Image (cartoon, rainbow, N blue to C red; front, side):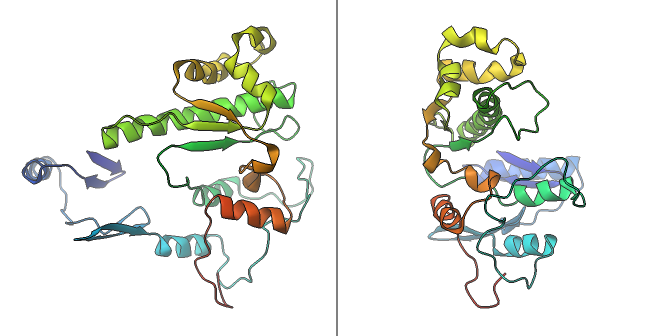
Length: 253
């Protein structure tokens, strides 16, 4: 197996002799260097020893803080003012959307476990998707389709890497009407105006590639990324998604 990011490669396998042959073949074809046992890759520090492999992202976390321009900033109990509503018509200076997405993307993690889990959250009033959604039910349906694409792709990647049968990703949706649109073909007439590509979620549910489950609004972990929450609710969801403070000193970042 070869993991490639631009011009950086990770090579792994179960036969040391085959790995050596492969690396020699690559050196004959390309100008490249063998850096030996993996120690650092894409922000992940790797320590390999007799007892196993451990990974850390302390250096990566500090770089992310620097990128956000928050080195030395005082900690805040919540990232947004509770119940704050953002509007497209705001007169505030525009933010750099690319930089924002880059920072948020650096904070996304899946909880450890044997099964991939996803929480999808959307609403008709604030959705930025350029599609027709006449209700919160349809907006959630479209969001579920997007989450399904990511979940199935990750599932197939894990099957390739681990060479085992993996459990279908669990897709948690807090809208029962949206779940009905996904699971029951009798509701097809209600979604004819929705772009056909979003019906992929229906096919995946029928084939067992995803496991769609209802999640109560109080347990919707996606809210921490989409809503301005109170401190108590924010702390509760932080704990549930496994967020950990790297530094706990008075001068923490």
